[in-house]
Amino acid sequence: MNKVFIPEGYRPTLDEYNTQKAIAYIKQTFQREFSDALNLKRVSAPLFVTEESGLNDNLNGYERPVSFDVPAIGTDAQVVHSLAKWKRLALKKYNFDIGNGLYTDMNAIRRDESLDNLHSIYVDQWDWEKIITRENRNMDYLKLIVRAIVNAICNTNDSLHVRFPQLQIDLCRDVAFITTQELEDLYPDMTASERESAFAKEHKTAFIMQIGGKLKSGKPHDGRAPDYDDWQLNGDLFFWNDVLGRGVEISSMGIRVDAESLDKQLTLANCDHRRTLPFHSMLLNDELPLTIGGGIGQSRLCMLMMGCAHIGEVQSSIWDAETVRACEAAGVRLL
Image (cartoon, rainbow, N blue to C red; front, side, top):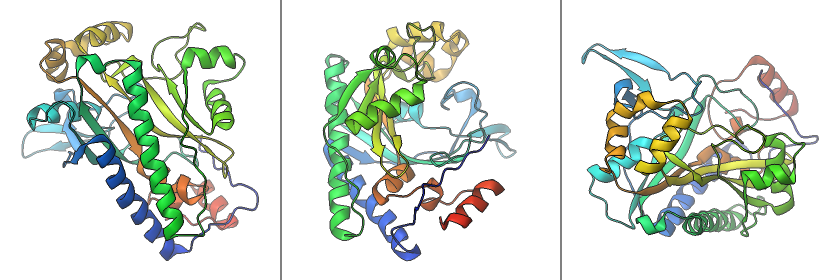
C-alpha cells in the first residue's frame, strides 16, 4: 500500500530553478568531501548484469529484479538492485591497493518498492568500496569510517547554508552508536522502524549496528543479504528529520564478509546454493580483497539538507494517483 504524508503547513523553501541548483550543489560538494575523506576514486559502473554472474544484490530476497533479454548475446540481463558485490570485484580488477577505494553513481529500479515520502522505485545513490586489512575488520574501524562520512555530510550542509542562506537545516556531527539488540532491549514494545526513529529523535545522528541476524525476540531487526555485509560489522546511518518528524536512513554500510563469515551466513540464510556462483566461489577461496563499503542515498541526502517533505521533490520518478493528488493539493512539487 502506498502512503504519503504531508506535514501541516509545509511549503517548499526554494522555487523550481533554485531547487535544481541546490541539488547540483549538494551532489558536487558532497562527492568532493566524501571522496577526499575516504581516499576514493570515481569509476564507471554497470546499470545491469547477467543473472548467472551472481553480482546482483538480492536485498531482502523477495524483490524481483527488472529483467530483459539481450538477443545479440543470447542471454537475459537484470537491472542492478545495488552494486554491493560488483564493487568488490572491481577493486580487484582495477588493482586498487590497501587504503584506497572507489565510488560510483549507482542507478537502480526496485519495482517492488512501496511508495511513500522516502521510497521510490528509482534509486540513486553513491556506492563506494575500500580495501582494508584484516586487522581493520573490527567495530572501532567501522565507527571511524562512519564518523568520517558524517563529517563529510555536515561539511556539505555547512557549505550549502552559505550558498543558499534560506536553507538552514541543522545536522548533528556527534554520532550515537547502538546495536540492534541493545535497541530492542531499550524499546521492547516498538517495531524496528519505531525504535530507529525513537533513538534518532533522542540523539539526532545515529548508527544502528549488527543488522541481519536474529535477535533475542527471534526476528532480525531488518533483512540483509548474506553475501556482502558481515552481519556483526555493519549498520545503517540515520539523521533526525524535523520536517517529517522521524529518523531518516541516509546510508547502509559495513565491513564486507570474508570467507568465514560468508560460509556461516549463507547457511543461516538457507542460501547454500549460491556457493558455486563465480563471485561467491572467489570469496570462499580468499581470492578477493577484504573491504568495507556501502551506499549513500543521493536523493535522500538532498531532501534532508533542503528540508523537503517528499523524495519526489528532488528526483524524477513515477507515482500513484493518490500521491500526485495529495502533493498537488498541498503545493508539493513533484519533479
